[in-house]
Image (cartoon, rainbow, N blue to C red; front, side):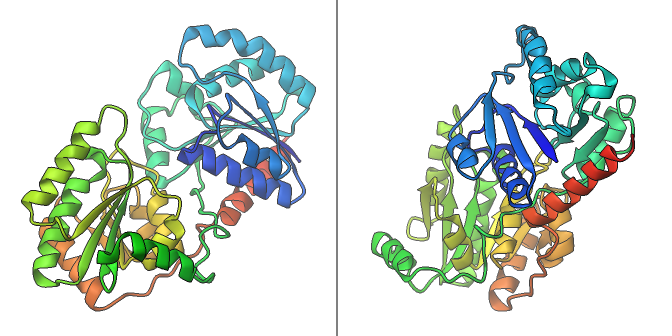
Length: 367
């Protein structure tokens, strides 16, 4: 099949990485993969593995962006794709207009993918208007049914975003050189149990709660050390400084490191005793938890958060009631004292690709 993915950009966000992994899997399976976006740092990785990239600025949420409808319609006619798969709001609106203007017998099948909680609006309506709609969680699917029911042709299909298990391979050994470099840089980590929270520094991502957990756990088990991975989002610099002050006030100056952005997450997940995903209710992704579980690292997360559906299947022992600090601390201590088995399956990007391709075949065969 010839598959065209359309999204806002190919920068390093979760949606862009998911599109990249899916494109690689399409090529590996013998399909033709084309991606249309405004570009970004992942383009070179995309084309290196056999996909084609076409640059088109469809990402700006403005009526002015609708001027690209005609150009996109001509491009889709030229590409003669079997399926067009759109996963961003403004690109979905432009693509829907372009697609509707094509002759029915010569247009590709249209799939839209939704990964967030969308209220009813002119921009969000396009995300629910594909011939098939993919939701990245049951929670997202339920919200689509509630808020955008009129646009849905059929109920959304839940297909979870999978993790690249070639990159996050629990069976591949961790380099001794990596460990040596890290301990040379941070000798205070040696001999400690690492508690890890990887997320951009933002009140919605729970770093303030993590520091409270760390302080409480450290009072009962001295050999723990906290690793805060991630940088402040634009406009959140004050929050980053507030976290550092909080760490000092909690007596954690020798118990926590703020590591900033890291490219060695596989190694950090594999070396940590627990990963925390303490995001707000609006989060629906859960990729941090998926990556950590793929590396056999236990995860603690809220039962109503973006990781809940993944943990329910792979590691229910890590689910905790939101804002229950005592439960977060006790669960942490229990996992440190008695590690639990992780049953990770069904959340690889091969699984995602297989389910998505099955949806395409079903759609293309439906006439």
